[in-house]
Image (cartoon, rainbow, N blue to C red):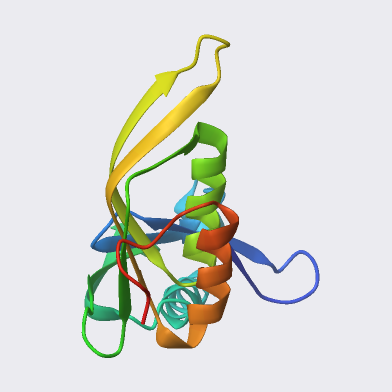
Length: 167
């Protein structure tokens, strides 16, 4: 996932947001060879990247942020977070499910883009025709209540069936 900070042209900084589960790393998409060539507003762009990431995940609670420094210049931020499973977040458990590996990757991307978090046990296999399948069990989706309709449509489109009715 990325975030663009800045004006309309050269001054733009492309920021990458990498979710490493419990910590999100925010860094520029391109690093120069010399830290003095870093954009002067990189720290602000990194901060905005963290802010953007958390705005899309209201169920995530910020714990701590640590700057990553290279020769005295801040080049990345690591932000530790916890996922709230309280009344502020909806949790749905699903029955075991199988779908193509490509569909699983796309589903996971769409869930993240909608502010949800997907956890599951994952296995994969190939059909005799060579199609790669993902087998999922112990599937749990956590999401902000405001996105319920969007995520319900999404999981139904991919054929997921809740273990008990979503509420």
